[in-house]
Amino acid sequence: MAVDDEHPDELGRGKMSMTKRIELLERDRAQQSRAITELIQKVQKGFTPEQVSQIRTAFREELADAGLRLDDASHQDEAREDFRFLRRFRLRWDGAAAKIGNAVLAALLVVAGGIIATGFWTWINSGGKPPG
Image 1 (cartoon, helix red, strand yellow):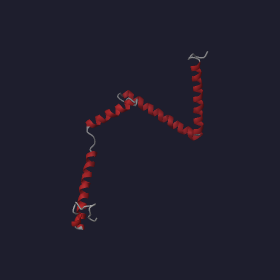
Image 2: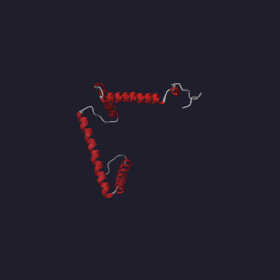
Image 3: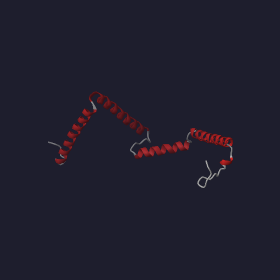
Image 4: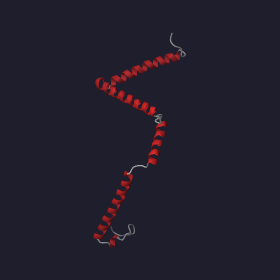
């Protein structure tokens, strides 16, 4: 690189031989590799028990804010069953969709929703009284 007003040779590279410059590059690469290796080894040691406790507390607070309580074993079991229900529902839907198609299932859901909405509005218009 030429030395000019825009790019001064602050490191004195112009005075170094090519061999010296390569040696410096290799030394820098080795130092950077050691630094990166040390960082990775520190991270791989894991979290301290205090950090794990803080992470668990933060996750539980966030999940509780979202409506998913996990502070008791019974809550955990209920949440697990809820997710199992959702998985079973999804698997059944996928199986039915493979057999009859999403369009037919969507049409059936729209018809069922329309029937429920019609019943709801009829009930509202009757003043909330049961039919009779």
